[in-house]
Length: 438
Image (cartoon, rainbow, N blue to C red; front, side, top):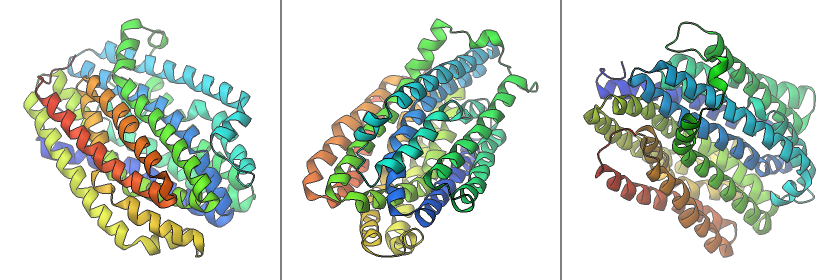
C-alpha cells in the first residue's frame, strides 16, 4: 500500500488516522485543563503549566527513539529486511527504558532545585511538587511507541494507542480530582494511568503478537552499535527540538512568573492547551507523512516522495490559516470554558488572539523536520531543531520581555512564523541533494 497507492489518497488515509490519534490527545489536554481549572483553581493551572517541562523532556526522549526507530523500521521494511526492523525497535525500547529510569532517579533526588529552576513561587511550589513527583514516578510508561507501529503501516492499532489511554485518562480525572479530592495529584495520576495502558498495549503488540512482519526477541533488546548510532543520529533532531522546547518553556514560564505572576502563568496554561488541541491536525500531517516518505525513499521512488512532501506542506499551511481565523474570532467563548471571568480571563483572551496568529505557520517547521528524518537526512533536522529555538524563539522571548506578558505572546507568535521561513529555506537546500536514503 505505501509503495503503490496514489499519493493523494494514501496521504489522506495516513494523515486522517494520525490526526485522529493525536486529536484524541488534544481533547484530553482540554478536558484535563478544564478539570484542573474548575476542580482545583487558577494556582493549580499555573502549577500544572510549571511542571510541563518534565513532560516535555520525557516526550523528547520518546520522540527521539520513536522518530529514529520509525525511520529505520520503515526503510528496513521497504528494503525487505524484517530482522533489521526488529533490531531497531528492540534497541529503541531499551534506550527509552534506560533513559526514563535515569530521569526518574535524577528528578526525585533533585526535586527542590528543580522546582526553583521551573520558576515556582510560594503559591505554586507545593502544587507543582505534587504534580511533578507523580509524573517522574510514571516515566517508564510514558510512551506507547505509536510511531513504530505506524512505521509498518498498522495505522488502526496506532490510533488505538492514543484513543484507549485517553479514554482512561478522561475517566480517571474527574474520579480522582472531584470524587476523591486529590487535586493536582489526581490529575497527574490520571495522566500516568492512561500512559500505563498505552505502554501495556505496545508491549503486547511488539513482543507477543504473531501476525506481524517482525517480532522482537530478547536478542533485539541488546545494544547494537550501528543500530544505536543510526537511531540516535536520525532521532537526535527530535530530542534537540524537545529539549529546546523544554528550555523555551522554562524561559517563558520564568518570564511570565516575574511579569504577571500566577495570572499570566494560568493564561499561558490555557492558551497552550487550546493550541495543543487546535494544532493536532498539523502534527497528524507530519506523522502521517513519515511512513510514506520513509518507505518510498527506501524503495527509491523519489517522485512519490516529492509529491507527498508538496501535498503535506499545502495541507498544513491551509489548515493553519483556517484554525488561526477561528480561534481569533472565537477567543472569548473558548476562554470562558476554562475561566469564568476576571483578570485571568481577560489576560487569557488577549494572549490567545496574539498567539493564534502564529498558527498559520506552526505546522511547517515540524513537518520539514519530520520529512528530513524520514529520508534519513538528519542534518536539516538538526539545523531546524536547534537553529529555530536557539536563534529565533528564545531570543525573541528575551528581547520582547521588557513589554511584559504581552511581549511574550508576541514573541511566541512571531517565533512560529520566522521559524517556518527558515525551515523552508533549509528545505530548498535539501531539495538540491538527491533524496536517497542513507
